[in-house]
Length: 262
Ligand SMILES: [Mg+2]
Image 1 (tube, rainbow, N blue to C red):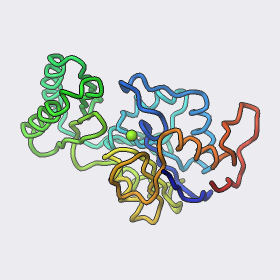
Image 2: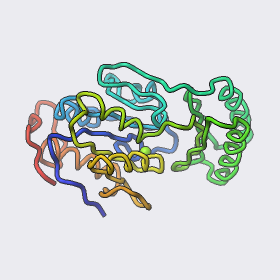
Image 3: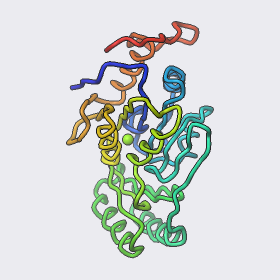
Image 4: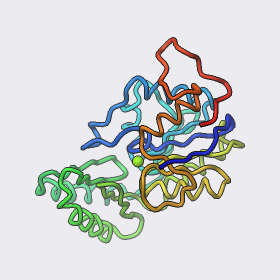
């Protein structure tokens, strides 16, 4: 399974992280980047003259920890926070007090159910149930209940073995749209790679902008291209950069200015 568009140096890259660039682990904190991952992202970033942004459900703080010492343009918490190419961070307003109260309720629920993992990202709250899938339905139910309590302004976002409560009105697609209005993204062709439900907003936007949407893995999608898994993504990006599927050793080949086609 897998076809992807032929490379073009005029692309602007938008990359989801978990399940797209990096393999999913049992818990989000177990996901790590290796030197080849940061080298790949750095290489791509300079190849497209800085028109690259990470678009994740993680917080920007979490993204920075994962890719340390890199601090790339990024949209965190599904677009609620965004760091532009100049390094300026903008957070969309959200009902902070109400989210704090919901956080306490959800934390208490998670503590009563072994294997569930609570993640408080500030503006959004996640319950991961990869280690306790039997509680998945209950986790969805408790977040829907919390969303009902809070009323307008929040929504529930499902994902792979995770359910989240987040402010409504912002999503990954809008974040990509915002990047595309600014240099160095403006005027380029957007390409978005993602693997999960929340990435569909991004696929819609790049389809509308005449860009390339690439779904990672199986499942119904509005993306126009597909790659099998994160390993296939890394191979494909390596080809874009180095013209071969081999990860170059430091001091090996320098990135080719005109990437070869897959
Ligand atoms: Mg993902």
